Length: 317
Image (tube, rainbow, N blue to C red; front, side):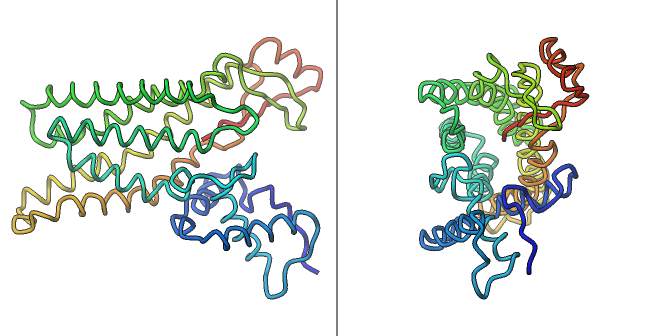
């Protein structure tokens, strides 16, 4: 008889970097967005039945059940169980960001193009944040709107301002402006979207799942980690692609193919994002450790009661 497993726990060791990378490779798999509603429902039914204690269906293996769980995780909200908007799912991150990033690094010279693609990017980010909002602590629409407006404004000010500054610099300098704008927007957008955590703190537990309390310090650490991973995630496509395109254009390789730069840059971004997305999501553990002495005094006192040395918190994505 096949040993039963806990499907609520990833199959790979999440304390190890490459274990986290494998987990995120499955949850960000772009092929999952092509699953039909009937396929999604079938996978959900099989996973739910297995969790209830039912046997694996005839003709299926435990690996098939895990694959079904990967599909469920990519399409359904982890807390509410509701099917998420398709463009807000983790499986849509690579293809959507491939298109957006490719267009931002291609059409960066004119003001209308900068405004449109920076607006489009922040609109997509707002959709992703709203789709993946906490089910236990719903994100108010006014908070989403405020974050969206400020992040879009920050990205536009950065992009348009830098475009003016780099006009006298080598042409390759202008190609890095979209990355600077995206990075600036992340520093605005993510903290605003999670302002409640910064104000009230996030729950911290010890190794035995004892609740130590809510920590603003842990919230700051978690949000800082998310900002850094998001910036690093966009860096390869938005930094290496301009360098490659500059070298290609200097050699005149696209001289007779005026149509080629845009699709080529989108393709470059797609390749980089396929690997950068899971690898950067995995930089920090989803459930991250924090030294007790770095937490607030009240949490340190609480930890003393349980003789705890390390606290743990969910950093989010």
